[in-house]
Amino acid sequence: MDVLRKLRVAVLDDDQSLVNALVGLLERQKGIEVVASWATAAEARGWLEQGNLADVLLVDQTLSREPPEYGVDFIWQVRSDLPATRFILLTGDPSVDLAREALRAGARGVVWKHNALMHLYPALKTVAAGSYFLEPEISDAVLAEQFLATLGPEPELLTDAERDIVILVAEGLSNARIAARRHKSVNTVKTQLASACDKLGAATRQDAVLRAKLRGLL
Image (cartoon, rainbow, N blue to C red; front, side, top):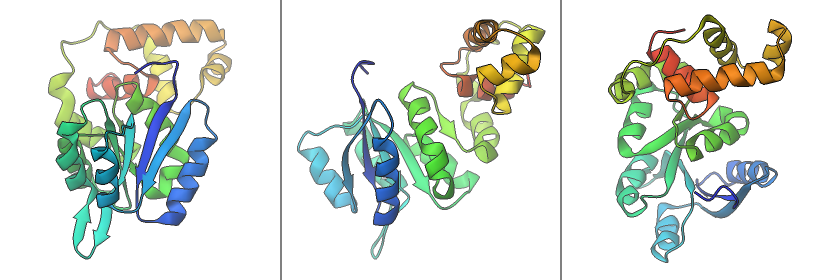
């Protein structure tokens, strides 16, 4: 994706109040453009069949109750026609089984609805960068099962300082807070984190934490 243009996001969810809240949140973020929102899968398919594209599609799991239609099925059905689009599943069901199913269907992220206003923006940035975003409570179980085989060869051993930085990132600390806690400059923290990411093959700081956990380094 061209880093100079805005990230194009579309939303498929029949809960209009939630859609309004999410669109309002995203439109306040620099570098994001909400290009469409739909209440039904049929509306979304019609938009896509006209040749319109989004970089990331946010898809609700429960699209229709009568007849039942689910976001995971929608992702399965359209993903082969949208190779450049990444999918995030929105769900009120905080289960590991559903997360596994979503990833098998082709989703790159799973966000619980009750966390959406807090987690959606970082999820979009992580997925747009080519990584996976899962809620912390399920990430270990799902990623260990689904992706350990894809991590490649064992990484070069992290130094004690690099491992310490990744641990603090896992606690949710910013570079500035890590620097203050460890009495280092922010530049030193950035350098050590970048080195850790490089050794782990991680695209983002969140990805570094996940990969370090899967390797048993944390």
